Length: 245
Image 1: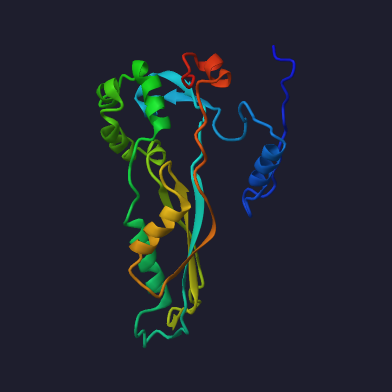
Image 2: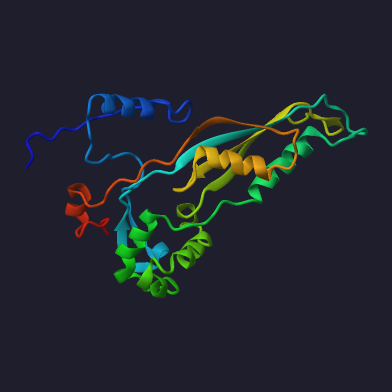
């Protein structure tokens, strides 16, 4: 047993608002030259059926080696409003709705990240459901087909692409015969490995066909670095330097 081992308890209070606490904690630990073996938080840790991965006969627990990026993108349209009998040029709601549709109708690339490749390679001996049973015999060669399979599955699709979720719309009219004035919408993105806040913004700017729609981030961060899995924190629990089952 390593008698020099230390545990750090870290508390952030703004995950659902400014989301700056975790970065401040990370910066502080880095300034103190602290390197953590692993982190335990509210994410993952559940023991659940492996059915979603084509392995219904086993139970699995996730070891999370990276975290997707996060972005809140605000779309804004300015309008003086007016009576609905004179909707020349379209209403602000119309322009906003079309911009939302432009983005949601242009999905991000689908890919099997190195982390997901490792997960399927680890689970391969236990996968009994087709088509995954055949595909995981050579995960690297069949990466595109596995990613396409994951995209069609409600549980697995977030693992293979950047997700797009319109969540907020503000400023609509209070009367059916009155056009709305300035309106805003927010689309939430969870950035997959391979995408960045910069590339997502470029993707959305290219997708939106209406030049009157203003686009900006409320907040955004890139995906995290990927942690190694050939370390005692993982190896001792899962064996063979692979995530545990």
